[in-house]
Amino acid sequence: MTGTATTDAAPYFDVADPGFSITSAAVHEARESGWYARTNYGLAILRYDEVGRLLKHPRLRQGSVAWPAHNGVTEGPFADWWASWVLNKEGEEHHRLRRLMNPAFSPKLIGSLVPRFQALADELIDGFAEAGRCEFVSEFAEPYAARVIAVMLGIPESQWPVIARESTTLGLAMGVTVRQDLGRIEEALAALYAYADELIADRRRHERDDFVSRLVSASRDTDKLSDAELRDGLLLLIFGGFDTTRNQLGLAMQSFVRHPGQWRLLAERPDLGTRAVEEVMRVNPTVRWVTREAVEDFTFQGLDIEAGTTVHLWSESAGTDPRVFSERSFDITAERKPHFGFGGGAHHCLGHFVARSDMSEALPLLARRMRDPRIGEGAEWLPDSGNTGPVRLPLTFTPAS
Image 1: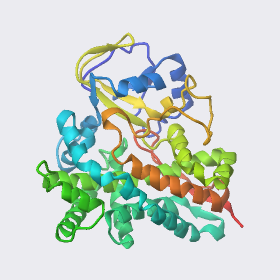
Image 2 (image 1 turned 60 degrees about the vertical axis):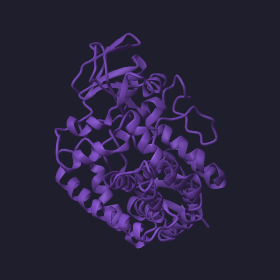
Image 3 (image 1 turned 120 degrees about the horizontal axis):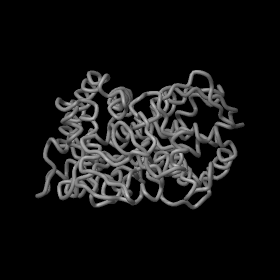
């Protein structure tokens, strides 16, 4: 960070260490002693109320824009693409991009795809249900997330391996090893740019009632998306939609393995699919922190925060704060305060309805057909900070009769 904050008495966490866990007992203990901690990036906010207030604080701006620079990446294709995100814009520029992109995320359009999401989930489960075991990432979460994106984009679902391969590599940009992975990240970025350009050119020739056509149509309005904005927005959907769904489905399975009674309840009551997604994202979100940056000096609850200070709002720590939620509770029937898994304020995730829709259809079908799931040997996870999820997740289960 370029600024500093008066945090002499606060605990310190090295969040750049791949071995650090944002969900560890040490973090939860720090939450009991105070509402913030120090990190090598800046401040970490640990409690629900403070996270909620700082998400919308007028002296904080979206802070993710500084992520490449925090890791020593200040120029090149990746740095340029990262700076282009609507997520990383502010003020009128941010509002303008959201206005133009919003019609493509129409709930009506997404809702019309729900039967296809259901059929896709059943098709994938058919491939391993009788065996009573699967490698969940490669056999379900990855192809499901990639094929959902293919359905949305109106492209052949057979092309899902391209989406999955390049998006998985691009996802390394969200983790603490971004600097060492930069070469691979930029190769994946170039491949997805070429893919997006071809898709946009096709829709300009042959318009359809799909997501890409709606984005292209928006670029024809008086207030229009530039060619670069159109391409960058499409690429963000491909990457963000795939990465979030794949990781969050794996984290959902981890959560339900820990709470088998809730998994059985979901099998009996598929109508709880939407609440199941919300509960998983409260206690086990793939987005472990939401980032803000101080635009000027200010004082918050007695803490002096200088301009330029990075403020990480830790979503899991907030979502499990015992001051707001029952300690260690996981209940898909409960009414809860909103979680922060999709951020908040002006920068609330633009594609949240897509992620909520596809996961809320998949989880009840998995619960109905995979009884008593258990995590087997060989599970492998991304670092537990930034964005996380399973790399490999072998599961065993009892097939439903």
